[in-house]
Image (cartoon, rainbow, N blue to C red; front, top):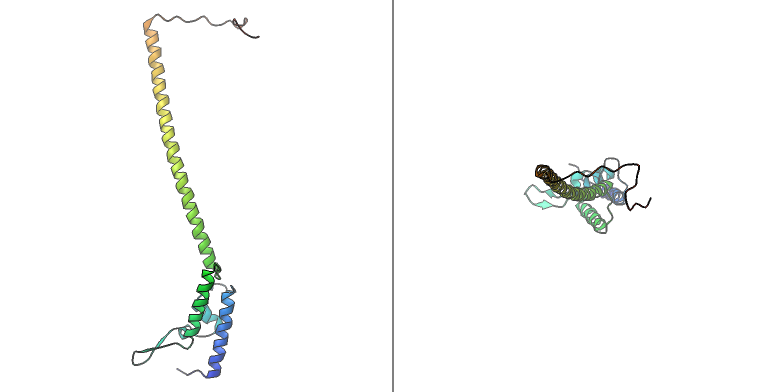
Length: 165
């Protein structure tokens, strides 16, 4: 692997910083996120340059642009903590999560109301059935006693006594 010259490294760092500023300002490419992968693609550098490297003896050394990756993550976290979400996808995900939570709450309230109404309907129907049975029983009892007389039907041509008409 070829070593970077100091001029090439400085140029790449400037490109990474410029891409970092664009991403953190919300200028994301189509299909991109506000992450290291998109940062590397926008800056034109290898993504592996943002991660630590292993020496042949097994020890680790920092990647050439690891300090920029840490700066990017730190700035991104600061913006997110301040309530500024630079990634429209992340904002959409948060909005949808909030909307799903609200809909679940509404659904739970509706289910509860539906249960209450179903219980009320069952109680009302059972009371009506009991009242109907009681009316039928009283009619049978009255018909069987024989001491109940029917009142004559009112004549339609004359007004009943005490009428205001």
